[in-house]
Structure formats: C-alpha cells, structure tokens
Amino acid sequence: MEKIWLKSYPEGVPEEVPEPPYRSIRDMFEFCFEEYADLAAYSNMGTTLTYGQLDELSQQFACYLQSELGLTRGERVAIMLPNILQYPVVLAGIFRAGLVAVNVNPLYTPRELEHQLKDSGARAIVILENFAHILQEVRDETPVEFIVTTGVGDLLKKPKGWIVNLVLRRIKKQVPAFKLPGAISFNRALKRGKGKPLHPVELGYADIAFLQYTGGTTGVSKGAMLSHRNMIYNVQQTILWTGDSYVGFEPIIAITALPLYHIFSLEGNCLTVMAQGGLNVLITNPRDFDGFVEELGNWEFNLFTGVNTLFTALLNTDGFADLNFSALRVCVGGGMAVQPAVAKEWARVTGCEIAQGYGLTETSPVAIVCKPDSVFTGTIGLPVPSTEVKIVGDDGNALAIGEVGEICIKGPQVMEGYWQRPQDTADVMLPGGWLRTGDIGRMDEDGYTWIEDRKKDMILVSGFNVYPNEIENVVVEMPGILEAAAIGIPDERSGEAVKIFAVRTNDSITEEDVKAFCKEQLTGYKRPRAVEFRDELPKTNVGKILRRALRD
Image 1: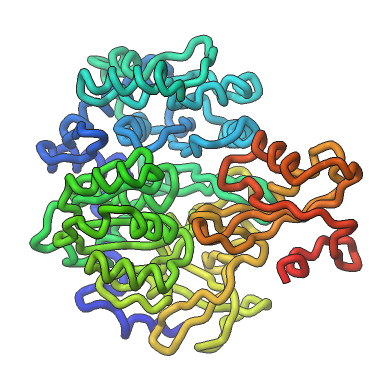
Image 2 (image 1 turned 90 degrees about the vertical axis):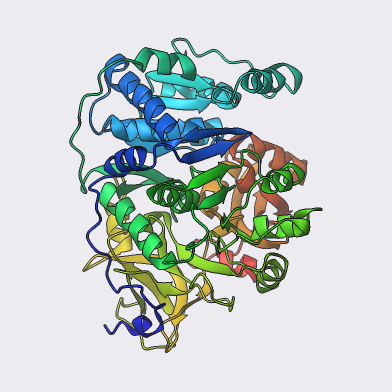
C-alpha cells in the first residue's frame, strides 16, 4: 500500500531505520558503560549512579546470577520493583548473564503474581521487601527457587539509605513481616558476585529479551515475547523520530515517573535515554505530588513522559506552574488518550506541547507518534520509521483513506508472539507480519492516524489495560454472586474506572462487600469503583453477555 504518511514526515527523518549498531540490549548497555562511564545514568532520592558505577554493580549481579545461582542462557528472572536504583542494576545484570527479564507489577495480588510466575517459569525473582509477603503466600505454587529481597534505601548514599529503610520498616511500617526461607538480600547478592568471572553468553536479534505481560480478551494475562531485535529497533526508531530536539540541551535529563516495569517507560525512558547517554531521574512515588514537584525543582529536565492523569495532577499541584521549564524540549503522552483541555493547559504552563503517541506492549511499544514540536490536535500521529499502518475491515482487507476500521501495524518492533500460546498469537497476527491491534481508527489524507474507538471491551485505567473477563472471573467466585459483567465508566482522575453489574443470589450482599472481595484479588487499578445489582444481565441468543448494552 502507498505510504502516504511519508509526505508529512519531519525533515531529516528517514523512511527506514538503518541497521542498528547493536545485536542485543546487552551489547547496547556494554557500549554505554564504556562510552559514557563518567556521565550520570540514574538518580533517585539524592543519589546518582554513573554509567561506570552501573557497569560495576550490574556485573556483580550478573556474576551472582551465573556463578551463585547457576542460571543459564534464556532462563527467566522476574523483577518486582518500583522506580528505584536497583531496577537498572538488576535489568542490566539479567542481560549480561544472558537471561530473560520478566517485569512484574509490584502491586499485584497473590493470585496475579502466582499466574505470572507460573506462566513465565521464572526460577528467580528480585522483589522489594515491601511486597515480599505477597510472594510468601504463593511461593510454593510457583517455580521460583531463588529470591533476592531489597529495601528502598539499599543503593542510596549512607546514612540516608539506612534512614530510609529504618523509617519504612519501623516507623511507617510499610514492610509487612514475611518469611521466605533461603532468600538473600540484594546487597549480599552483589557481594557474592563481586570478583567472580562473567562468562560470555551469545545473544542476538532472535533471543527473547522480555516476557512483558499484557491482558487479553480471554482475561488471561499473556507474556508478549519481545526480542532483542524488537527492542533495539524500537529504541532506534524513537531516537530517529526525536531527531535534533535536544541539540543545545544535552545531555538528556528525563523525568521518569511512570513505572519502569510498564513498557512505555521501559522503552521510552530506561532504554532510549540510556542509548543516548542521558540521565533518568527516577520518581519512586509519583502520587506524592508535593514531593514530586519539589524534586522537579532540582533539575533542568528536557524530557518528560506521562499519561493524561499524571499531567492533570501536576497541573493542579501547587508550585508546579512556578517551575523552570526553559530546558524542556520533549513531552510525550501515551498509555491513554490525552484530553485536549489538558494538553492545552500543559502547553500554556510549560511552553512545551505534548506529543501524543500510540503503541502496545506487542509493539515494544512505539508505533505511531506525533511530531515532538507539533501543536496538539488529538491525532496519535504518524508511523515511525520502518513501520507500516493500515486500516482494515472485518474481512482483513485494507480500507480507503478516511474509512473507519481496525488499526493494523507491521514493523521490526512487532513482538515474536505470545509465550507458549500459539493460538493467541495466531488470533492477532495477519499474513505478512501484520498485528491486529483491536483498536478502531482511521487514517486521513496526510497519513495521520486517529483513534475512533478502542478494543470494544477493554477498560483503560490510567494507561493500564483492564480486561473485563479477569474482573468478572474474580467477582463470580464470591459466594452469593451468580454472574457479573464489567465495563468502563468515565472517571476524571483515571480516564476510566471499572464498574461491575452483578446478579446475586443473596440479597444481603452489598456494593461494599463486592468491593472488599475484589480488593483481596485484584490490584488497585483493576478494582471496581462502582457496583450495580441487576435481576438479570442482557445476553445474546446464545447466552453471551452484552457488555455494549450495559455501556449504552
């Protein structure tokens, strides 16, 4: 098909991505450690690690994984950490040991954690001690053999690190008691790896880098196999797209508030900023908006990535408008639609437009993005280099310009498939390597793509996908609930929130009872905000619940 979007490309951006200089993320990291050794790589709570320090620490961790645990090429290691300095150390260590990273949301419930560990076959996990009690509940049901626990302050400068850990453990009591026999502390793991030889492991394009879990219409969380090729190409695509945005404002100083375990921040901040020798300023608790704004005041940052809810909250936080935004050059909004009113106010306050983008876990994730300096219009932008987009009808055939259909994407960043789920993979892949996104949109005559509707049943809460079947499956496990249906309802803070419609066999069950039951089974953003009881739910003639009728 004709690539009509090329006529709207920014000057200097090529149609295709040149062959990347690295064959794996590991190779990219090794280059960065040598090339940028004296530059700052990550900063958190007043402590900064240089690329040279990250090199040393990640090598120690890689040697621990190889020599002490005996993990071999291709085995999976789970990372259950928020945005703290340990995350990049662990991630780089995993790749240097030739292993596969499995990102885990630290807020998962025992049920969610058990599924992901069992499905991925992870033999080892690095987990923040605040959440270790969750692992304790399901450890015996998972393949996990090796556990590394860490405290928030473990890599912070002394004595601050000790104080932070003491406050969280003893004063704020945010570390529930846990028993995980055989677990080792993060700093002890580093000591055990120090001085050990790092055995070279062959890694290339075809090797899996991440099992990045995402939901599905079946409600079963699936591991998208993202190869080193997928990720390296997507990093190169992103760098080409931003072009000379930072000229005169180097190095890149990125505010990294979105969680690194999420594909948006993982690629857009962690990998892409590192590839350019930049600094990621890690925000561990972005919900502390007063503290967040205070931290922003310490930096002349030039890159900010976020979601609509984050932009909104900051704009409504005292002191944000008074910050110095003179260095800010690139703002990227993704994960959920950026509201026009929010984009307009952000541009007024900061002087920098939000470049809205679009992608999926399955596309590593960047696929379609607006020009960094373009005025916000609501479009999700143009396909990045080496990426093709087409709009198809129900028969899978391409539609004409302006017609509405399913958005399909093809490019080197499209996943290798779902981990051990060939049928699920086949369900989303069209002949020729095209990925069916399930999202409904159109392309205009200038090649810009516009979202018209999302996956018909998916709920998008603060940029996170929530799939109704998973919520429904939990609710119907509650005694006294016969059947349930979940839909998304508008929410000022999160874009959408979950609402449950339920049929009960016990009239004494209340809305609060259902919410309390879900609280034990579901992480925060998946929990229903509203519950409505019905005598029956609308269904098709074959008995399928009509969620659309409930939405209407």
